Image (cartoon, rainbow, N blue to C red; front, side):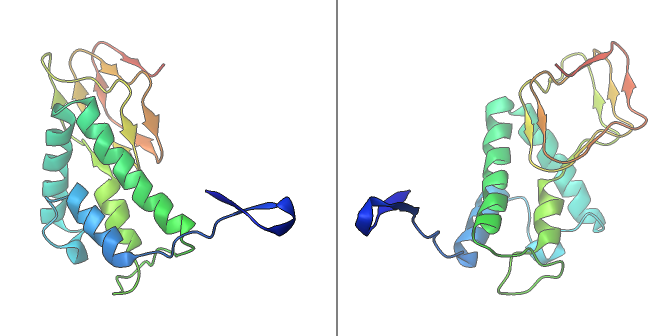
Length: 166
């Protein structure tokens, strides 16, 4: 939003201060499957299992459900950047944890078998890394229009009928 000042010059209105409590509320709202954000780490086996289950459930709900989550996660990341707040590598009560956001935002489909009645990933948005290592696509992997904000990892994936990334 812009505001006028004397002399007719326009300037940007100051950004609202970063509100960690509201940010955490929205992170929890988007990710109710995470019981404890302090333990949200890819190194935590129970978290990794829960994240994979959440990714599968969200992806099977369709592109609109997936992208609603992805766009919400990306908006949270942009809010941190716009607020001039740095993600902390360690959890602190007054700063958002980079480890938690990155762990939660990662799409984990490693070792997943996508059979003939499964989904495609047309126009899906991935707010952080998308991991498809060792995944098996029996009818092809369709990612036309998908956007990958982080790494897209397909090492060892089996693409029986090919793939499309147009």
